[in-house]
Amino acid sequence: MMFYRRKVLLAVLECFGGQLSKLSLQKILFLVSRHQRARSFDFLPYHYGCYSYQIAWDISALHKYGYICESETQYELVNQHGFTSQLKPEDKSAVLHVFRTYGGFSSDELIKETYVNYPYYAIKSRIADRVLTTAQYQQVQQQVPRKEAQTLFTMGYEGLSLEQYFNKLIINDVKVLCDVRRNPLSQKVGFSKGTLQKVCDALDIVYVHLPELGIESSKRQSLHTQRDYDELFADYEANHLVHQGAGLDKIEKLLADYGRVTLTCFEASHCQCHRGRVAHALVNRPNFDVPLKHL
Image 1: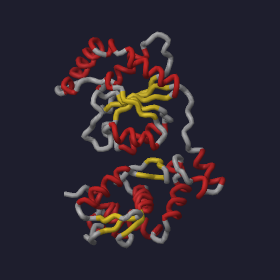
Image 2 (image 1 turned 90 degrees about the vertical axis):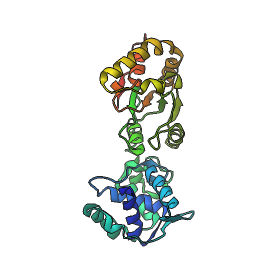
Image 3 (image 1 turned 30 degrees about the vertical axis):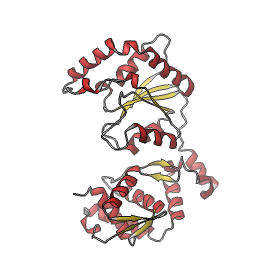
Image 4 (image 1 turned 135 degrees about the horizontal axis):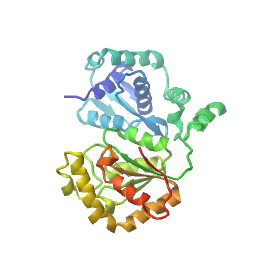
């Protein structure tokens, strides 16, 4: 059974004559998402504007299963399967509206259109200063988060897409992402160490893995109630974290050097994740005066 979002992607290709350049497909799907009540894809600011890693992963899967062929610069439908007719009425309407509005736009015109109307997504662009007027580029610069106050953040990725997760980091002007998982692997696509480090590098965020602050996965197998979590974390504080002064020192050094640091793990709530206890241990250190914020 095909993911619905992939049907949206294929329907876009179908409406646009069966082929689009790689840049254009990202921009067209972004514009479609602006007209959807439930967005099929999330996007983040990237080197050429709005970008979705999920789209790239889905295209790879669709290529593997024979729905799409790929050249160096474009994607092409292998067969027309009537994907547009398989969409919900509101999503079909969104796709057709974008086709009627932007069907004749080149890749360069789509880039400029999205930069001008959605300047936040151009803040990481390598070409914004070349394709925009001075006034338009100033609008982009005004969207760049500039927050200098030292802050320790914590954030989990549960329930978030990779793009939603990194948008939170960008908006809060986070400079360093500290992964406090013992084993930085995830069944959720995009959240294993390799991908996190790659995306951090692309977005000028420093990625640091501190496995010494993690909890063994074997101890996390029977967590059903908040009491279960509280008992686990009490044991973690008393028998493990108390011996991890060097790891806490590393975080303090990162705060001193970069100012804005996020501790990350899986759980959405810091009350159900040991990152909350790591943050608590830091806040209770003598002379630690950096504010704490849970994202």
